[in-house]
Image (cartoon, rainbow, N blue to C red; front, side, top):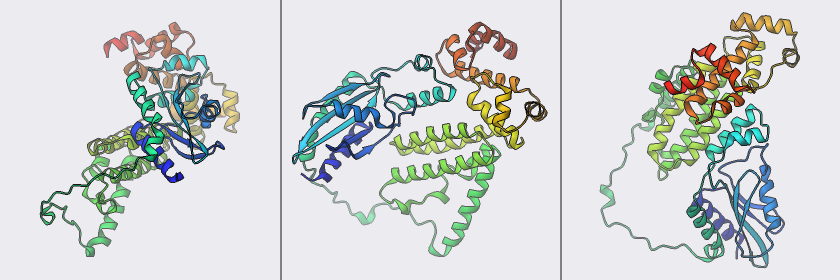
Length: 400
C-alpha cells in the first residue's frame, strides 16, 4: 500500500469532516496535517501537544479512540497497520457543547489579549451534536476501507452541442492589455488611499464584488470558488496594509485579518464570497475611521497601542514611561496635549467603549463584563458607566 494513498485518504477525511486532520507514522512524525483552526499558545494542546499525547496513549490497532483535554477539546483517533508500518489518523478538535469562555478566562486568569484570542478561537471551533460527531467517528473507523477503495466513477457526458454553450466573452483584446494593467494599478492605489482615509463609500466604488477590472477568470477557468478565495485573500492583504499605513494598532489589525482569513477559507458558495469582499472593505474602513493613530506623534502612538492591548490591567505610569524610554511627567504632558485626555481617562474610555460593545453583542452578566474590562467590583463599574453614558449598564442594554 503506497504512502501516497494513505495521505490521499487523510485528505478525503479532512474534506468530509472539515476538522483539523493529522496523519502520523510510527515514529510520531507528521506525514500530513491540515489545520482549519490553530490552538492559541496559552491553551493546553497548543503546538500539537494534544496530538502527540493522544498518539502515545493509543495502544491497540484498528480501534477507535476518543480524547478530551482539560479545556473540553474533543478528538477522535484511529491507529492502524499498513505494510507492516503503524499509522495514526486524528481529527479534531471540536466542542460537544458551547463553552463558557468567560469562566475559562477567569479560571485560568487570562489577560485581555488572551481572552480575546480565546473568544476568536471559540467562534471558529465547531460545536458538534452527538449524532454528527458519531458520524465522523464512523467515517474515521472506515479509514482502511477508504484507502483500499478506488474512486473511479462512470462519467456521463451530455450530448448537447458544446459549441453552442455560453462562454463569457473576452472583454479586452491583447492590444489593450498594457493599458488594462495600468488601470488596475491606478485603481488599486486610489482604493488603498480611500481605505487609509476610512472612506468606505469611495473604496466600495473602486473595488467591489462586481468590478470587471479584477475578474481574472483566465487564471482559474474551471475553479470559480478558488479564484474568488484567492482574490479575497489578496484583498485582505491590501486592506491590512492600508490599515497599517493609517497607524491602526497592530493588535486590532491582526484580529480583523485573522477573522476574515478564516471566513474566506471556510466559505463554500460564490454568493458568500461576493458578500464577504464588500463586508471586508466596510469593516476595515470603519476600523481605520475609529482607531487610526495617524494624527499622533510616535511616542503617543506607542503609548496608545500599549493601552489598546492591556487596558484591562492597572496602568503603572512609571513602568509605561520606562517601556517607552521617556520620563513619566513628559509622557503624561504629551499624552494630555495630543489626546486632550489623561492616560487614566483614556484607559477608562477604552474600557467603557468595550463594555458598550459587549452589552450590544454578548449575553454576559454585568459582573462578567465588568471583570472582562478590568473592574473587580461590578457596582463600581456600574457607577463609572452611568457617569460616562448617562445610564446604568442594565438600562443601556434594555434600551438596545
